[in-house]
Length: 468
Image (tube, rainbow, N blue to C red; front, side, top):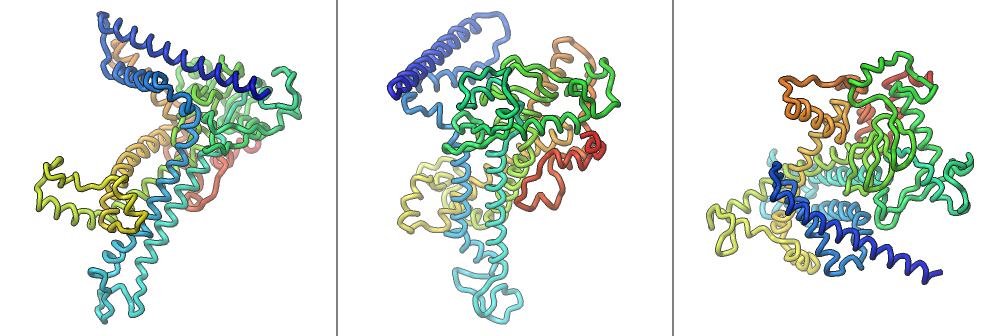
């Protein structure tokens, strides 16, 4: 039995290798054809395709696929994110805390002011109340980032489960056909695998409760006021003409891959191979899809990540600038100095790590490593978080906004239209209600508590509770 399984794995790996190599050859042939074609040549698109093709070609040409990095790398990405967060918090308590103490506790070169000076924040015992405040903030922000990241990682995004997946997950009844599933099997839980990018990480996969997912989908119909078969939660429905003009559409769709009828705003994810309710995007850092059921945890992860990065930037920018200004005064404003100074003074992790193990590294060196990282991550995440706030206010997902831009481009450019008429959004309740439906009650944002999205929506739409 083990020999058969090993042979199947080898055959599967061989097929995967041949398929990707053939795709690389086809991409190269299409690139040569596009160069000689009279159509518009998109240099950016082809650069991305050739780069991706080159990575895959080297991966299979040098037989790196035998390490199965293409199978397991996604499940390790959330662990990498958590490791970086923990490393930043530990660097604060190991090295950066002394910099904060010198800055905020009126300590000069390690000598504390214990006089009767009214400007001193250190008492005679050497205790500093501001240092305790910063310690509490760093621990709180670190815990909230990790809590919300794990919540978004392990929480189901809201899955409309295909019957073939239910049949595949039931190992006890191997001969059962998908369309003959009984009620007992539908109530079983399904263990997703983290290597399939369905949540979890490092071999720890989430458990999907089929009955709960079906209940979540039924409530989504009611909350949004959408007809589900013969059942209509909100009798004040739009006409067919208005539904065709609306975007996102409030009609049910059919998935040709899962072979199921699914609710509006539900899309099939090509990475994890499942239909996700109110699909936003597939997040590599979460190893999971971002959808209706875990969008709040995803937003709070971005919120606390931004808060943590910019808090660290505000605390460390003065010490970092003082060190770098000294270097600039000595060597000038050179990005790449011949004497390996200027910005080359920023240390690499490979240089600092051995000194950390020997406990011989200076706190200024850690600051020169941590501050640029916090600034880069904080700047990018601020833009990313701003985009998602815009999506929330507009009652759109990332995928829906991209589709809306394509519609606008098609209407203005391809059809040479002089104006663009934005379609109505039946899911838009106003910016205030949209924010409340995404984040939930404001006090709960600052607590490590998971909030069910259907309870938030029922609070905003009490009439749906009566129809449930």
